[in-house]
Length: 299
Image (cartoon, rainbow, N blue to C red; front, top):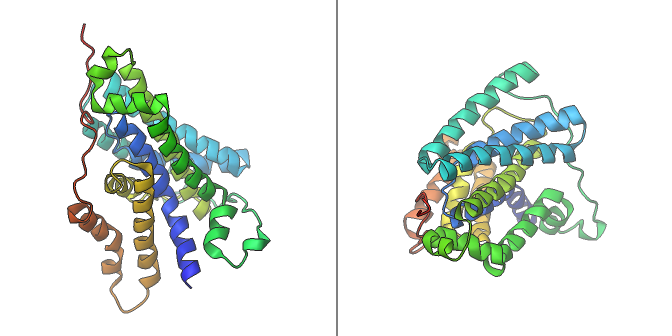
């Protein structure tokens, strides 16, 4: 029972973990990325199209990552190159993605609700872990294992590599980074594109796990991933822990449905938990000092 609960929590936490890690890279570089919701949605749709037309879920994952990178490129150009308001750009991309995927769903699949079903990624058979559901889920499901690897590698890249140092410098004090010869605009764009690639993996997981694309299937996960990033204090490991917490809340929500508690009340659980955690249980969370502030190079 407990093992199955933990296994389901792991599966539900995957899109949160990818998107939260992506948001961390973007905001550590100084760019707010609330476009994660749109990135998840576009990537899920591209994954469905890629899988159905290329007849390979792995190519579908590649299509999802490509869609995530292209969506984030739009955000990067607007915010870093043209110094647009980062919140407005993110909201615009989210609204555009909702309308665009609905339109393409009708055009390509002649449906207003969902795509045809398709095969997901094959799971690896690990007989020696057959009786340990959480480990079997973690090690036997490619994208779940990849999410865990990305969190560990992402933490090391951010805090142990020259690129991570330059990215964090651009988010904390871009003027100082510029004076040391760092290309602030290029580094910030790289951070946003990494967030798009990781968000693309999250979107790919949504489509492949449900074996179809459903209109609006991101369902606010991009926003909750941003909350997880803040709860984790812009640290990949902390963000992953918060994602597991929100994944557990969603798992409880699913398991409580059908009982005597009203469904509408149960569906509020993840969002209420998000508000409660952000309101008072994480202590003081300080964002990068220059996040959300466009940088103009002095002449």
